[in-house]
Length: 280
Ligand SMILES: O=P(O)(O)O[C@H]1[C@H](O)[C@@H](O)[C@H](O)[C@@H](O)[C@@H]1O
Ligand SMILES: [Mg+2]
Ligand SMILES: [Mg+2]
Image (cartoon, helix red, strand yellow):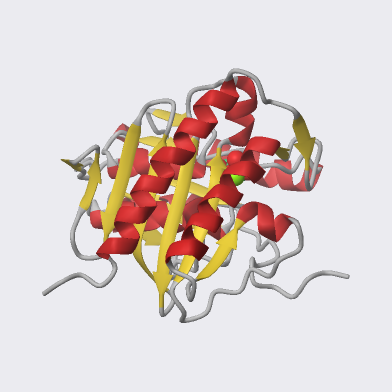
């Protein structure tokens, strides 16, 4: 039976690759840095240019589909996920890496129908790695099958996370409290790629056993969440319940056991949800 979303997924891969060309070209010149929610929450004209490129291409080809984009939301658009076919776009995941030419920079495009991710595309454009997943059909990197790690012992694991964009003392204390507890399980190591999407693709690739973060947004993780689950991984809320992609909290792991062990060490808090009414 024909896959009704194959055309859309093919378009997502093609536009992600074209966006990657724009990112690589801009790496040579445009790194005019602006800030958003804090002095370390960076955005560039390339983030905005890439989001416009992706969004316009979707509007032209799929005019009835809805769009959620990081930089559009930053400019005041709502972040409401309905049952309608919706493209969830992070034009550059790893903007700080982009500004510093640190080689983990991804274009992330998730596609949701009835609030379920149908396909995910994460293009790590400086590595030229195209991560893809279609619901029920597996996860791939440049066409090669992805499978999570079979490591069952957290003390022989590497865990990925990020420090986020807040430098508020209370938020930083929470982050370091969780980090210290996890490091001292002990685990083999902790890694931060600088991109939520690439951290999750590392889980899907079997390179790290788990990734967790509080403070991410739906556009950071929508595409990669399907890549992890189609590679045999598990998604969970930081308190151990079901993951909610709008909650700004996530654990992605190779197994339920390791995901649950991570949640035991996380000092959790609840940032304002992505779909929360705007704060006036
Ligand atoms: O680079 P962006 O798209 O802004 O996303 C990152 C976010 O800025 C950081 O605060 C998070 O810690 C990362 O996980 C995101 O990838
Ligand atoms: Mg991001
Ligand atoms: Mg971004």
